[in-house]
Length: 142
Image (cartoon, rainbow, N blue to C red; front, side):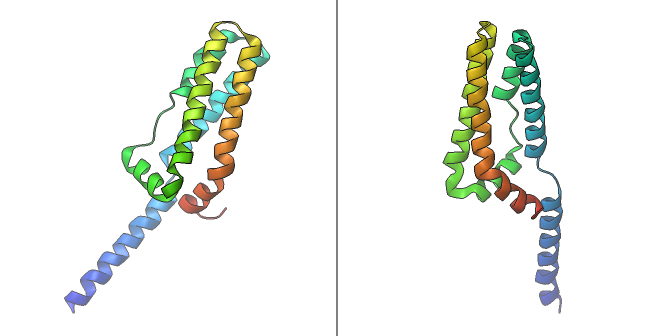
């Protein structure tokens, strides 16, 4: 009897852990929320030609935190063969935020706006491709 119950108990515990894990927000969710706030700060800085604020905020976008290793592994397993695309979007975001900071440092308003437009496009492209599948996979259909 114990030989039958042990595998069933182990399976139940694994399912419970998976359900709990799925319900917990990913660290990536907070990272994205913080990035959104930083993007809003840049928008505010651009609207007031506050290049110092834009320059100070750009590295927070370019060098945003990474999820913990265990979460990265979950994300990589989920993304699978599309990991190259995901990394390309992240690299584009890093690059454009760096360009944004350099343009702001130089006081180049037109360069800031162009870099910010490219940065927004890189965010949009990633969200268009990955946001809905992420939400559905990690949090269930909403």
